[in-house]
Length: 369
Ligand SMILES: Cc1cc2nc3c(=O)[nH]c(=O)nc-3n(C[C@H](O)[C@H](O)[C@H](O)COP(=O)(O)O)c2cc1C
Image (cartoon, rainbow, N blue to C red; front, side, top):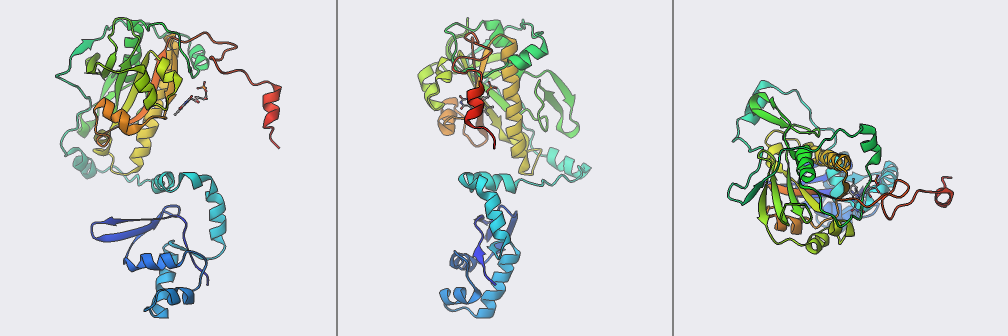
């Protein structure tokens, strides 16, 4: 029988145990550290005798038993299925190990029944603040005279496009204020039993923990001084985080993208991790957090469109530098998404500047076989 080390191994220490696993097969076992040497010896297809020769001092039977056990636990490949697995895994190659570890490691979540005991245990911890505020910050309470969002839904849905350049005109205050309230403001509270009152927003939110917070760099909003603010969703106010914030600096934090440098406002969407982890212990909840951020991003883009603005969203940003700018630790609260908006330039053929409809030549260029 021929063996080879799996190409998808990971290892870590948990307390005093060394855990080695295969993220594609979703296996993980506690092993003696000498197993690492054995796995190292199985870099390419080999037999038990090759490994015995390389690891001097071990009996053949011991090595064979260990290799069969590692094979059983998916840490060693043996035979043909390995080739098929490798072929299927080629699309993940550039993302390994980080993204693959997360993706495969959070498959098949344990959605056991929610017993009264479990709920009591989860709810028994210290209460987690569901709204963040900066009580000592200078603040500007925003007007509560919402601009109508009664545009025909179809016009908004089909009219939403990603805008990468904006007119140099200020966003009216009421439009800005309506946008923040429509995306981040609570719209109702429900009775969450052990978890108390849970806020609802216009976006669906797995777990209804409303973990996202909004920080907004204001560059061109009528009646609002430029600066970086935290949006206090409960109070509907802007809390000043820092006065000096330049378009160039924020643009640089987002891979130098011109859309960010031209936008009237740039929102940094963060997630307060403890709001979710206090209720959901399974790591799959992290997936839900990312999905939730996507929902908020789409609501932002649709609300901006309905308010006559153009929206731009990006995941291209320097996380730790953004977190330093916001003054958050990147651990308990972490940035997930950047959303920007401004007064749009006129569309041409229904497309923003820089985009043109695909004609026959575009379809021909990469024609399907
Ligand atoms: C999560 C996410 C990240 C994106 N990141 C970028 C980006 O970094 N730069 C960019 O120019 N567009 C970015 N976009 C915009 C997409 O390129 C755009 O949605 C796509 O080309 C389709 O165009 P449409 O939004 O007008 O339908 C992003 C969109 C999403 C949803």
